Amino acid sequence: MASDFAMGQFQFLKRLLLVHGHWNYQRVGYLVLYNFYRNAVFVLMLFCVFYSVIYTSVPTIVVGVLDKDLSHKTLLKYPKLYGAGHRHEAYNLQLFWITMIDTLWQSLVLFYIPLFTYKESSIDIWSMGSLWTITVVILVNIHLAMDIRRWVFITHAAVWGSIMITYACMVVLDSIPIFPNYWTIYHLAKSPTYWLTISLIIIMALLPRFLLKVIHQIFWPSDIQIAREAEILRKVTPNLRS
Amino acid sequence: MSSYTPSSSAGGVGSADSAAPRRNSKRPKYSKFTQQELPACKPILTPRWVISAFMLVSIVFIPIGVVSLLASRDVVEIIDRYETECVPQNFRNNRVSFIQSDANKTCTRRLTVTKHMKQPIYVYYQLDNFYQNHRRYVKSRSDSQLRDNSSWNDVSSCKPEDDSNGLPIVPCGLIAWSLFNDTYNFSLNNQQLAVNKREISWKSDRDHKFGNDVLPRNFQNGTLKGGKSLDPTVPLSQQEDLIVWMRTAALPTFRKLYGKIERDLQPNEVIHVTLENNYNTYSFNGKKKLVLSTTSWLGGKNDFLGIAYLTIGGLCFFLALSFTVVYLVKPRRLGDPSYLSWNRNPGGH
Image (cartoon, rainbow over all chains, first blue to last red; front, side, top):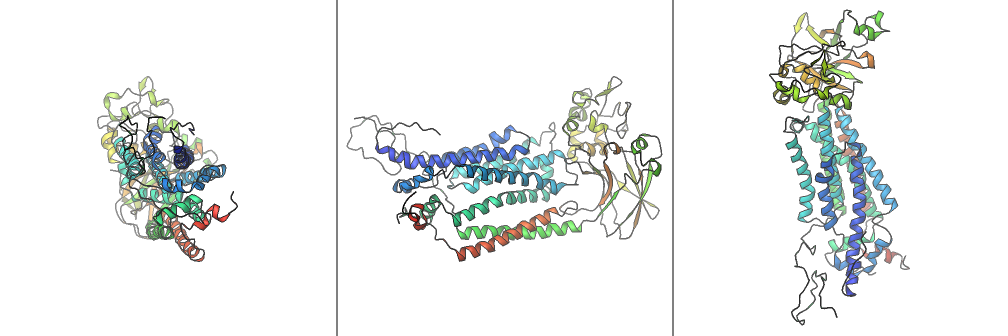
């Protein structure tokens, strides 16, 4: 993490540390985990430049730049919230391994569900690959969407836009006769099985993660979680002193 | 001191510089984007949202699961595995030499219809343990040659089936060379049952991938025949068996469409199949099956989607109920400061 800053007056140190330092830590911690996940999920499939650059990197950047968990007013008023950084709450070994196990589960779901759905059928290799590709893109974007804490217009555009651009690219690429996957997406889109398989994969892959998130937030809420609830639901800068 | 006013985070707290004389301010222009004050939606997982989410999933998934399962159960399928039974007894120990010899390969099978089958009834051949998805197999074709007569010489990607006796093969490649060549003839009550072999391939393939001016040339002319021979007077766009075969399958157990029977079949009818057991799957212990199947809106017979949807729907319903109980039994007031770590442990960390 970058840690060299210059400022003109000592009074700016407070905001730098408590507001921007906090946001910086939360964002970088989350993004490191998310990028491990995003790349590992794709390991099962053929490497594709489009995936990393066009289909899924824009939402990552947008979230990294714009997402905030708490407002600067709350952070300045209650410096103890900065303790989340001291306690390594956004990125630690346990979180890393949980992320990896979750990634493994999602990859298995992603790979095996189309296999079971289409076993002993007449599906061809290009259609199967097309299904895997689009599902991976939708899955990692919805995974990200589940974790975004502040939705602005640009975030919506980046996340849903990526999915739509992926589809648009597939439609364009599948309209060129010299490519082997010619007409694949048109053929698949007419089949209800295709759409049902995609929905099943998304829900099944993300269910454990969602469940864990909910359970964690009920029984072991973090300080940031409570501060966020107070800030958003009470609509006032919360009185976090006891 | 310094005469600069560096970019203090101006978010609402403007430093009053009305008293200062006009100086070159380095403060960047204020905009909602750069100060991260865009209007935002900040979702929180309240109990209402959690329970609603799970209920929504279960309300959507359970009916879909039921409908899918019913559709799959409606499909009637007759599967007949014949590659072992169609080898005469005396050749059973040496099936590879049988299939490569000139012996009579005709075989008769009997299929009994169990339930009423509505037309069109699809006739498939199913192969097991045949890896059409092997990387080198998939690459062994020349799409430009298939599409265009002028590219008949473009065989570089087709090795080892690129040329024979010095001349290029059209269509070249392993995929075309291994074209399936068992044939099936159906009769019912001593009457021939017609099988429609037109329009069994993708229309986009017939129109754009296989040229109507490309004729087979020098095909299956080598020392080892891999499969079916093609009529050299029929252009590739009308060779539908080839087109279906060249749509390489994704999995090692796959079906390919052979034709369609366009009349209903009643229960307890017996269909006699006269088949030519030509294709060599014995070298790699593959299985050959003849499949007659109706279809539903979901495709062929596959209970998996129905069962999976029902399972997930049921699980989500159970979770919705559990969380309702949890929220009632052990509620946590959202945003309550008494849960903060420094309020729970006044001694501090």
